[in-house]
Image 1 (tube, one colour):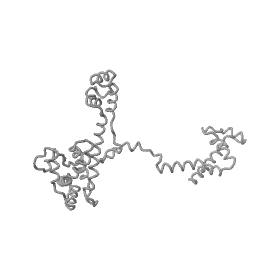
Image 2 (cartoon, helix red, strand yellow):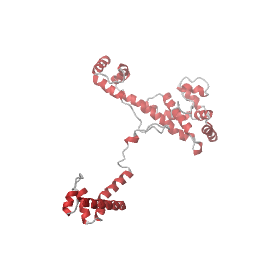
Image 3 (cartoon, helix red, strand yellow):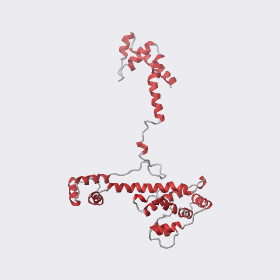
Image 4 (spheres, helix red, strand yellow):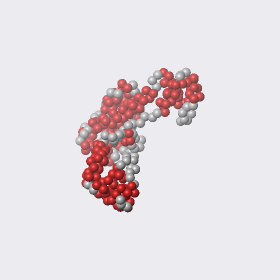
Length: 299
């Protein structure tokens, strides 16, 4: 769910807190945290009433009350991710987005409190934010890489790869090795992609997991392979055993003599059995029909 395209729940960030009914000056994160910790919690009956009003009547004032009463939960969860070196306010902002997603999807008839349901959505948004930002941190870890990271894009012309002359010029300008310029350009040209895909409701979207997964060990595939092997061995031998000697000889000579399917011709077998080629074709056709029935019974 993209907050800008779905039901317009109020954005709950330190910079927009006043719009949600906060009083006083919220100029920093400490003031915001202090303010949300003073917000009253909802009883289960109140929570159910507001959630039902949102679900049935799209009551945004009810949604606001649900969001406001759980802002302290976001602050508490965000505190556990401070070790990643990211701003506390940014973590809270991402968590608030997850909280709004949870409020939008919450079903009061499930018999659970919103706090239990919202934890997953809050953590999911924080995790996504951390992963995206950690990729940027890992892209530029040394002093030279950081210098390249902040200057490479401004020196590139369009989206094409840099020429050898541009690489040499940038390396000279920034006093770094040309190999480092090449490596950084390759890193910045790559894109991260979530394996599981977005968590919105667009059924047309699909994730790499849909086409990267292997079905080699999928149970139905294994059963089908085993059944096919049995048809090729036991089933085929059973079907051949039900043919008369001449019919079996014709089938084996025509279809089973060589792996590439280049068996005996109708005329070769006609000379062997001293009959016409047309008669050999008729016997072959009848034998194949009988074998088809035998294989169907075996299956």
